[in-house]
Length: 102
Image (tube, rainbow, N blue to C red; front, side, top):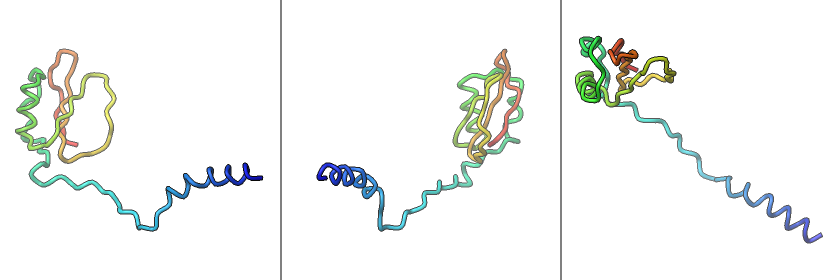
């Protein structure tokens, strides 16, 4: 009889640790500042150039984005939209084929 009680207590104890009397605080990401909003029109002139790390930095700065995402040929990319990200797609010859924001 004692073993069953101990087993029941041992099973319930981890569940009790999960409960809380406090109201959970919602965690929503802070939207990027207007200064980090990507501007694709400002970087369309880089289409056709060879993709290099240095050119990526130049595109990042010129677009006003906070992050850069390279899009190699035949690769899958997430469809999440981020207004502070510039996407640079290139072909097998490392020529930039498209520059977008998101």
